[in-house]
Image 1 (cartoon, rainbow, N blue to C red):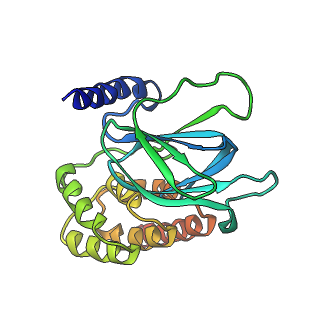
Image 2 (spheres, rainbow, N blue to C red; image 1 turned 60 degrees about the vertical axis):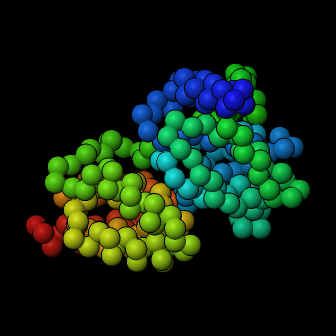
Length: 245
């Protein structure tokens, strides 16, 4: 009983603390560090967080499973390289939850602790805790009428999370959404369920005819980490919008 009370107290304190940087009504946050406190690069659901540090915090992550990749940082390297991969795994997060993820550089394992973020270093050193908001850049996407409800989308996510590969996830989504209408905001949320940009682009192309606010569709480019993928989606949106003019 005392253990349960302690866990609930920690989670409650976590909720009140994380709002200072996440400002989120739904979703959670993660703080990643290495056990030897060396700098690294972080990729979450295919999105590359370009800065490096000895700790990185990402907020506004939708509830569910997220693919986390941690790469060793080497000055002069323009992007994360596969050879520098330290950790690659999936982490489940709930609404208003803060997870401390401590990666062991020797074993490649991660220790996950539910709790509150440690006190931040306010100095100007490279060890500062870099904090990121996971929301897309640019104008905030809006909810749209006549689209599926958030509850229905959450139920769909549960079925998608049961699939192992991006290909299976995409097939499941197409089957479940073939007679549904979506908003660009909902497609952006679905993007976070995939591991690879190529699948995100393929799904975005398929979903175009199901979206009620295609005028906002270019905002999806912010959810892609690869320049080629962004260019491909940008070109596709231009072609589709051109045919409608």
